[in-house]
Image (tube, rainbow, N blue to C red; front, top):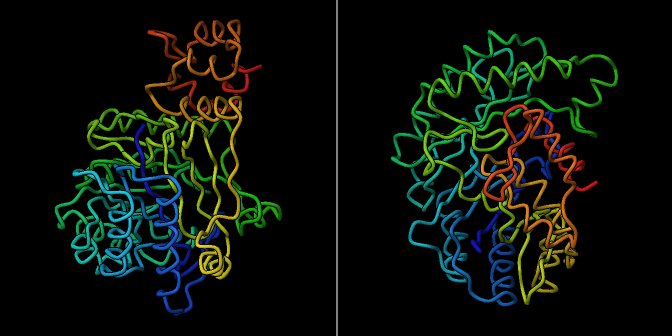
Length: 376
């Protein structure tokens, strides 16, 4: 089973109104205490789990591109010491366009995959999304990332308020012509307890209906397929199999990863058990926990076979390769709903071949509902 390291850097220069991640406003605090805690937490995980070669290290957030190259290098070196990094280890940095001046030193520190959070190439849309960069800066950031010689992925948000499908097609075609090999394309979702949720509750934010959102998704697939970026997951497209996100595939294939940094989640297999970990959410609490106990996680729970199966099914149906039906059935101790599966195949929402269940493009937009039907 493959293994990776997720590092959560919780600080942002500004909090986007659609964001529901565990993030905090960067206020010029010293990074050293949190860096110390993350490195110590990595070592604590290794002491508990034993040495396992990591195929990926993923810096998420928050805005980890606020970190200087030397700070990133310190964490990468800590992961290498604790676990050992595979020769071709994928080291991804989620980055904002306004941090492009740091990309070269971040690549020098070991980052070999830049995930650029452009989110849009329209200035009005970027302002509405609470982003601090403009379209020109987003385009420039992609070029700067590509100039490092490392892999480049691009994030965009669609089905935005007032956006037309034709305008989205043009914007997406522009993005796919850039020097990128991977794109993550997310439909704008109104998450609870965000600024956008409060605006929507007041009637000040109107997003597309379900039918309109489905039309956006269909248009997205059409543009990406035509440009040679087929979907390998609901929201992710790559030019080639090699360009797929190795780290995110750990999640979708229910493999193993540790989560370090405030609020990070992990899934690891140890002594025959599947363990879910969650770190302290507030940076100060996380730092204090590592100092006092040597570890940053607030909870670690052994998952039941049914919980493992449900999670594997939910995640596996997101990717084009699907899931192995016999594995899910063995974990659950009973087969999946054969009548539901037959109906899904008949309606063109799923395929069932070679022992694997996979969703079609039409089925992927209903992935969560389909997973529930299969275990009913």
